[in-house]
Image 1 (cartoon, rainbow, N blue to C red):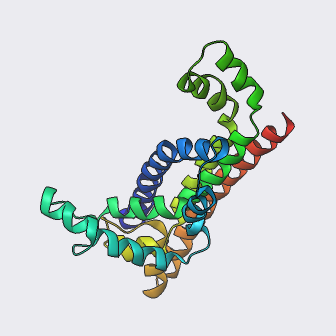
Image 2 (spheres, rainbow, N blue to C red):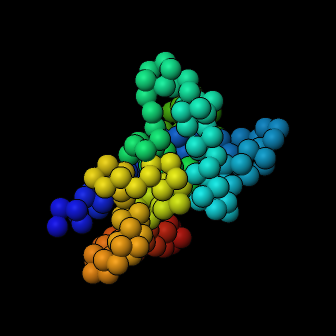
Image 3 (spheres, rainbow, N blue to C red):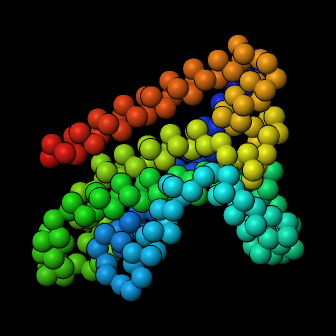
Length: 222
């Protein structure tokens, strides 16, 4: 039974860490894209949302080139700090961050775009600096949309398979997430175990999606 629950616990760990990282990085980027004008904006946004359309295995390949032992960043990381991300749960987090980042980016961008910029202008005329405008006006008004994007990121991280398998591998108890465990169970003919894991994954993701839809509906009504 422990072998069944370990992938679930690991998936929750990966999804939580992924959501936190994507939230911290994605919200400021989404705000800049929604509010700022600069050369190459459309190209940068296209690159950031590219994981939505690229196959996960291709994303995993790019990550291996980047963070592998012989990769540009991975080689420096190993030689400097003796840290290896490939075949670790941290590598699974990195893979999930790349694949789920566009979900929060697009949702948060729309949320910030819906904030009345006249309120931000009034705050500036009253002496507020940009940080005060962001944390006092923009962020609270866009909170529901950001929360919905975070939940979508969490759900996407729970179900990530292709990039995770290529970067983190399939090491039971170490890097075997729910989706990878389901694949292994089916390959091994363990139909009952696979069905149990499928039910768990479906229920968790369904609950997250229901919560996200409720948040988005409330956002539209306001």
